[in-house]
Image 1 (tube, rainbow, N blue to C red):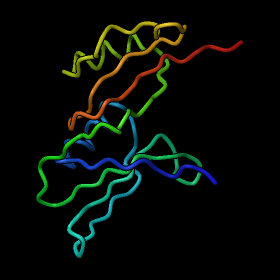
Image 2 (image 1 turned 180 degrees about the horizontal axis):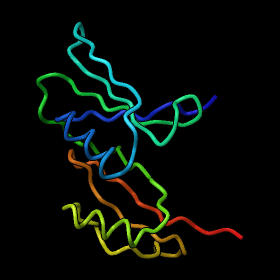
Image 3 (image 1 turned 60 degrees about the horizontal axis):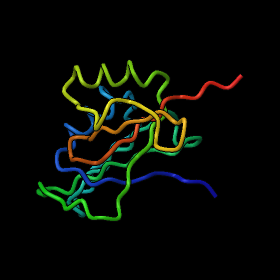
Image 4 (image 1 turned 180 degrees about the vertical axis):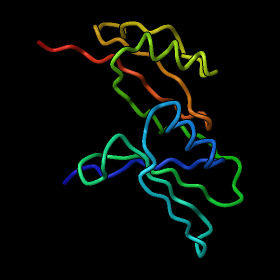
Length: 130
């Protein structure tokens, strides 16, 4: 068994695709309209679906608002240089929740940003292993 994808419902598919591809560097792997169900699916990721878990964005036609709920946590992305990444994201208008820094009681350096629908994205600084 393996994880195939995580699905998020989005209110503007084009804005969300732009965020995940242009801002976070994912690739649009495939997209499919489902006219009978009145929704569109877009699959994005950092590698081919045969080898990597991907993100599924679901746009339900005509829906422009969702409640976040209290069970959703976040999507975590490892970044090579969290400080440069946050600087780049903030220059593009995406505010980090706090300056990157260690998580309390840990040496893991992280911060959070939000996607266009308000979903938290955790950015974790890549640990160097020698």
